[in-house]
Amino acid sequence: MRQRGPSSTGSASNGNNMYGRNSSYNPDALEAGGGRGRSGMSASEMNASIMEQQNNDRIAQLGESVARLKGLTLDIGNEVREQNSLLDNMGDGFSNTRDLLSGSLKRIGTMLEKGGAKHMCYMVGFVVAVMVLLYWLMSSKR
Image (tube, rainbow, N blue to C red; front, top):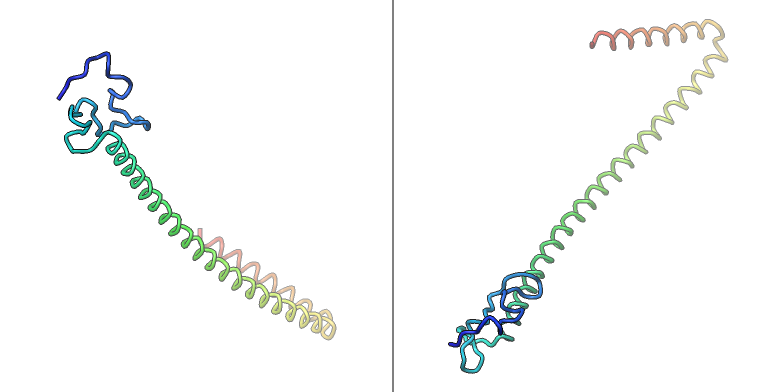
């Protein structure tokens, strides 16, 4: 094995590859015979191996990110379906309530037309009694 002097080290002597990371390539470990290192690989083969390993690591990270995004997308889809179902049920409930109120208003109108002032007094008394009951229930919970 030959030793390199400080004048022949160049920029590759710090052991950093183009990504700023330390690589396993060591120029001082090259043997004099054929430019092969201790592992039997040339510098270009070693560099290609390092780059392939980095690519494989990045592909694995990308695969993990895609899997997370897929899971998140599926969760969002499920949530949207549940929300749509709830909105449909609310729409049906509002429609039923609207029908009940319109029927009640028709009956009240019919009652007022036939009964006159006597029925109006009963209705006002009932509304006042309901309001007093609600007030009493709300104040007793404190």
